[in-house]
Length: 251
Image (cartoon, rainbow, N blue to C red; front, side, top):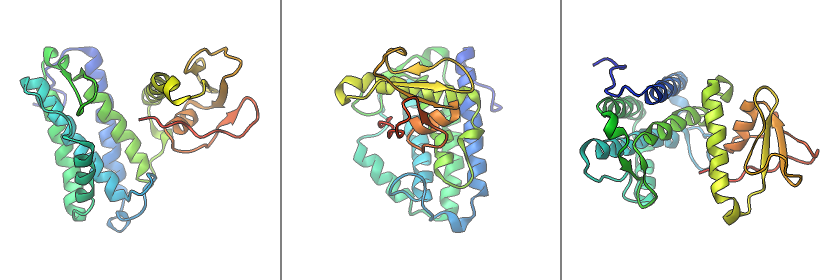
């Protein structure tokens, strides 16, 4: 099989696989440009070195592959046994040698892609779940991986930037964050943020765009996505002129 020889003929799934392929290549290029001496440096994520981020990306691929195998075989295999197991795995991975860690990035990504390539259209619709949470179709594993590789390339803090993201990725991220906030708005008292991109499209909101009590933020789509994912305030202004608030947690 070549990399494009996926069993599925669904055009939406194939488009999603193309986007995750771009993101994987982007992460790989970012990592390749990072010298070995920089691996122990701080990442953009609190308390994590770049090694932690890289290990997380590796084990994320392995966890998602377990879900893909579940979809392929029908044998229930959650992504992780527990959150603690996931955290322990990342800590162990962060202590691998530099060469082992770099190699693991490649092998785990290739194994996940191989798993995706073998899924039939019916298998893609199989419900799976991470651990004890809600079920979702196997197609969701593509998005879960897509956001990992694009965002964590930036989190390596070694040259990757949201400005490099394709528009489809920026728009999907922003919609994903707003959907997450929407689902938790009442429980966590999240304000009705209205995100008004200055470079394209109509404003997007958690609730009513015309809500007079809404917190309206302006910036380019990239700026708004960077802020919404908790990675900075660059380019963001408020309609009220007040200081830009911190973004609620996303995931």
